[in-house]
Image (cartoon, rainbow, N blue to C red; front, side, top):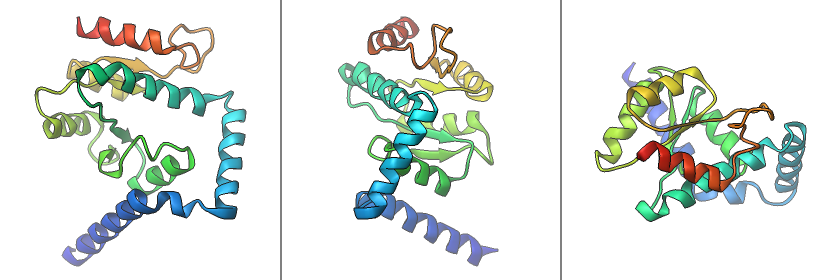
Length: 176
């Protein structure tokens, strides 16, 4: 019981340290090339989804800079360790520090969002970006703006159709 919890906590702390301080070093040489190829192939197969998603997050960051230093937080339905690995592979580890990566696997998105709101305090402004019903509902419950990740090119809210200007308009509309 308790020993297993301590061991798990230690392992998670160690993995977070590796993610934070050595993610770049883990991807040197041949591994770096393999990861770059994997990223390029995945981006190609998904029609540029990785590139567009990264631009969307960066647009939200830029749009939020006038209100202070924006912080990106990721809530995943998956486990923490595979999520951190994906962030490294998808070149998002510099945007999402390990301490800002949460798993909703056990408690759900609403509980994670509430934990995040408590951590950053009442003066903070939040924006949820996602593709699922659960995060949309959690954002609605907490009165957070929600930007859907929509992959259908015909949809105006498609991640492929969102420009930084549209992101700023969505943020301004939600805070007004």
